[in-house]
Structures are given as structure tokens and as C-alpha cells.
Amino acid sequence: MENNKGYLGPIGPVFVFTVLSSVAIILLSKVVEQGYYDNPFTLYRIIIQVLPFAVSIAGIAWATKQPKAGAASFGVYLALLLGQYMLAKNNISSLTNANWWIFVQLLVYIVPFFFFFVFAGVKASKLPFIFAITLLLPGTNVVYHASNGISWLGNLLDYDTELPVDVSTILSLVVGQMIHILLIGELLNYANEKNDGFHRRIINPGNEYDKFGGTVVFWSLKAFMVLAALGSFSLLKTLVEYFYRYEDYAFGGGSVGFLKWYFMFMLLSTVLLVMGAAWYFRKFTLEYFFSHGISSRFLYWFIQWPLLGFFGWLGVLGNSVKNYEFKDRKATLEQFSSAGTNSIVTLFMILTGLRVLLVLINGEPATILGTLVSAGLLFWMLNSVDGYKFNLYATVFLLLVLLLFPVFKSRSVELLTYFPFLLLNLGQIIMIHPALHFGSFNYLSYEEEKPWQPGDDLF
Image (cartoon, rainbow, N blue to C red; front, side):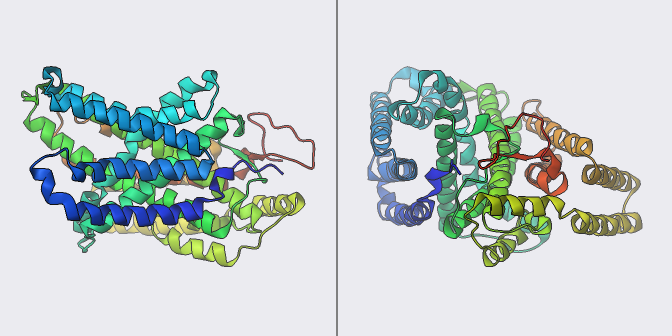
């Protein structure tokens, strides 16, 4: 069996290194913070800007076993940062334009990651697609806005959910850097033609995961999806209010229109990254289940829950027994396929029925109609692949509509409260696919001659 997840071998130690480094960065920034107000290009700036990138690229180089490429891309980053510093120090007039300055900062952030692949010896024919994907990396930065989203959620639930600023920053640093590692690792697989062209519904029973590394991947993906939803809502809400207020003014010499489209692109990148994280989570979880003898569809579904899923993962770890042979993994896969969906559908119907009953008792006509429509769509998704696809596409469409609010001068901040729930729901829909319609999936066979063709059913 061929393991295409070699970069996850050292993911456990890399995670520990990332956590400790993030804590050290926060502590150091507090020590030298005062000097920043006298001169922004001091040790404080080096710590808050250079060290996080250094930790990120070190983790990537460690996981992918590409130390030379990591060192070279870090050199590119320092050169770009030095050029940015020199331009700012000499007060070049064109850089007083906020639009241009934001563009320069974007290049400083993205280009070193792209050059990592250049220095890793990736074929030139693969580089255009890789560059296009690296353009999405700024979408990971919304996790740094999650603290405001967490506060909003606490107000919505009338419950204190405040996190200390330092804890929130460390959490965001760690999650963002782990997502970078997973993305770069998969792009290297693409460059080396090890990932079957990013087919989202193909399972590789040969991929290896240990319990600690699997837990790191599980936690990183789940945390990213939750923090991205909360952070993107917070950022979107702030932008709507800001752009409405300053629509007719220039910002730092640049037009507000440019900033609108820039932040819309960043938020769209976040949506795409959440979709990618959900696809990765789905494939990873199935492969972990089959390589560790777990065949429960209900458990697979339960661990997808935004918060309770973290506790469900403990049950996964407690029931994990490593399968070393392909025939054992295939047998677990067949048991998963034949497990059925009765328990999942029943629980969905009970929860939906209770929701409909409460709305019928206390709701207004519009709320009742909306609830009945959503219940019908849910029932369709549970019983039909076409219903599943419709729910997926409809959720994407609604997210795109909400993303356009700042562009069209809308002040409907109340409607934006749907955004984090829709984004989380999008991830949930992608992840639940095999629990409901496992016949849409296929697997790589090693002991058997069973070539896979796009569109094939599992058996």
C-alpha cells in the first residue's frame, strides 16, 4: 500500500513546536512592545512579523522534509521585507497610497510560499496552478478576527464566551500555521502526482495516520472551520459598517472601492479554504477509520459536530485498533458501507421535528414557512444524492450573496448573522456526504486490479 501522507509523519512534533513557538512569540512581543510606538521598524516588528513566518516555514520544511527549500524561501521573505522597509523608510510617494501598500504587503506574504515550491524543484508545468492556490493563503488570516466573533456569539447566546487576548492570538497562530502545512503538503503531492488529481471522492487505504498525528489533523481542521466562520463574520460586519460610513472618502490616498474588492477576495478565499478543509477532513477521517478498524457511520457523523465532535474524537481514539493489511482495511470499509443510515436519519428527524413544533407554537408565518422549507430540503438531502447536491449549491449561492453586501452599500448587518452559520453548514454538508451516500465514493486498490474511473460508484 502506498502512503501519500508522508508529510503527516512528523506532524505531532511539528504541532508541539508550533505551540511552544507561538507562546514564545507572544511573550517576546510583550517585552518589546513599548518600543513600537517610537519606531514601528524595531525589534517588535521583527518579532510580530518575521518570527511567525519563520515558525510557519520551519514547520513546513520539517513536515515535508525540504529544509533547503524552507531556508531559501525564508531568505526570499527577508529580502522582500527589507525592500518593503527601505521603500517605507525613504518615504516613496507612491507607497503613501494605501492600495499600493496593501498590494506590496500581499506580495511579501504570498511570494515566499510560492518560491518554496520553486526551490523544492517542482516542475514548471505545475507552478501556475500552485501559484493560483497560494493566492488563497490570505484567507487564513480571518482566524485572527475570531475573538470578536466569539464575543458576538456569547452575546447571541447570552453567555460569557470571552477568551483572553493572548489565548486567542496563540490559538489563531497555531491553527493558521497548521493549515499552511496541510495545504503545502497537498500541493507537493500534486506536484509529485501523488494525489490522483485532487479527486475528492477517492479513498486511499494506504495512507497512514497515528493517533497523535491524527488528533492534530482533526483538531486543526475543526478549529480552523469554526474560527474561520466566526472571524469572517466579524470582519464582514466591520467592513459593512466601515464602508458605508466612508464610502465617499479616500483612505490613505487610495479608494475605498479597492479595499472593498480586496477584502471580498480575502473572504472568498476563506470560503474556498473552508471547503478545502472540509474535503480534506472527510477524506482523512474515512481513511483513519478504515486503517484503525472503525466502521460506525454514526460515529463518523457525530465527530463532525462543531463542539461535541471534539469529545466524539475521544471515542474514536478509544476504539482505534490499527489495521496493517489491505484486506483488513477493505473489510472495515465494506462494514462502513453496509452500516446504513437509519440512526443518523432518525436523530435528524427527531431534532427537526422538535424544531418545527417549537416554531409552529411560537413562530410567525414567515418563520414557520422558512422552517418547513428547510426541513423539506433536509429530508431531501438525507434520502437523495440530488438533494445533497442542491443543498450544497444553494448554501454556496447564499454565501456569495452575503459577501456582496459591502459592495452594494448594504447596511443589513442583521442578515450577516447568517454568514457564520451558512459557512459552518457548508463544511458540515461536505463532510456528511459519505455518512449519507457512501456509494458515491471509491477507493484505491493495491492487492486487486480495480482501476478507478471518475463517476464510478463504490461497489
